[in-house]
Length: 585
Ligand SMILES: Nc1nc2c(ncn2[C@@H]2O[C@H](COP(=O)(O)O)[C@@H](O)[C@H]2O)c(=O)[nH]1
Ligand SMILES: [Zn+2]
Ligand SMILES: [Zn+2]
Picture 1 (tube, rainbow, N blue to C red):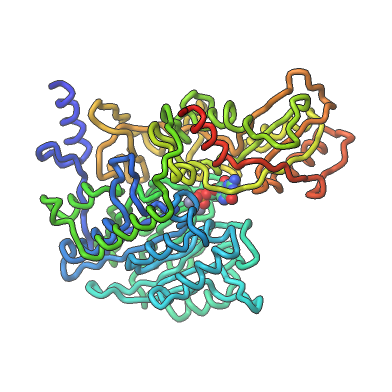
Picture 2 (picture 1 turned 90 degrees about the vertical axis):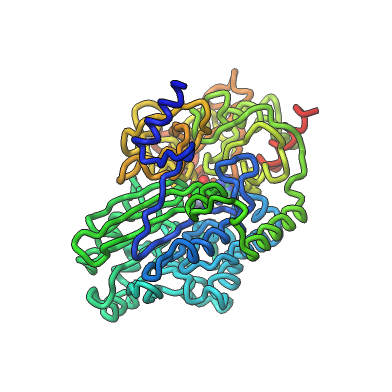
């Protein structure tokens, strides 16, 4: 069958073992092995409509436990790491109150060796306190939770380390001496319960770091392990590159291994001959695997693999031919716990039927199957409050980062709302002349990616002239009838990172903000319009309006938060549900 011939040649040349239709890329183990997760965002109950990611957190716990017992040789170690963002994006974390209380309990059942926080643990004081008390300071993790540049503000207003500033340990089997640090990217939107110091400032100016480098000089450790909620590729700020340059100056000759997050992509970067950085996607779609051999030589060997979060991948990498053997008592218990919580939260309650797929990053924003096109053309204009007036021009703006995932054809359930747009933001508005309102989107969507507004993956993608974004290399585009769309990652080590063969997906340039416009056909420059936006974006909107006034030398007065009023009305989550219910009748 000609397609099979094409398939065989791709699988053979792309490093897949081709035994009997098995198309997996295997793992190469080393003396020190790492498994990494990041940006799970509450996705602990598997992707019910995506076979590529059909494993849940109980299956992942099973995978880790059986990996340790079945795959490791006696002189090999496995270190399991997470780099934060554990809520906002799934009903399992977001539908409970307090938010994430149930999902944290499930998440923490996994025996992580190192873990830390992400920016989503820091938007809300109650969530921050919950993370500090029940995870960072828990008996299980208090010696494993590391935050080198984040402090918790306790009840007496004192800034205390959010976990350990660093940890030193020697691995059990290979006796590898590891010094570990953890950094959050330069995040300045947090709450009254937390203080974030930019990573470079922290390491350059803090006393504890100086003392640490004296206590753990280069000859007393075998490697530096730096993990944290920070992108491994950051075209705009190059934060990780500047941090590496400084750390390399303190530890010039040993391996420095990074594990990153936040930008929701599979990525692997070579920072120098003895330093690499792995990033392992998002939403429990990916288990990142890294091994290092010849760690203490001049040419350490790094190996990376992105494992689909699927039972098939887990069984394959455990060398389990019979899926029935993929079993541990604890794994089964956790899977049952997840099901009980999902039932209690009624996450499978069906509100209606989605007639087609709507994509949030793999289609251009103006395409009919782009979720942004659905939102701006159909959903946002449904926002109705006592202030709505058909005689007044109206703009409704949201940040693209508020949309979290594709919306697939099929049941629209209670969980779909949290998966697509989880944020319960309030609508605010300002009354300004149309000549100003009409320029805000262009200002916010200018050349720069705005890390507090945009789609996370855009910080790590290089823009190309067309509206699609470029991956690092030119990996072959795959489109075979019997394959599903999925990751075909290109990174600094080439095109063979993914453990399974999928059809390629193109990523498109997603602007920082999108908006709907109404009743503008007769609006003159000085006509007053209603500019409506998420309260989450208030600072950005005020700055944009004042910049536009100044740069155009308008006579209008500079605005402040005093000019911002409540607009009211349903969140995008609810507007979406009402629309789907209506078309499903
Ligand atoms: N409209 C809102 N957008 C939010 C809110 N909290 C976060 N965000 C968006 O998420 C990304 C960051 O996501 P990450 O998973 O990469 O950390 C951020 O850029 C915002 O766009 C919110 O409450 N409302
Ligand atoms: Zn995230
Ligand atoms: Zn993040």
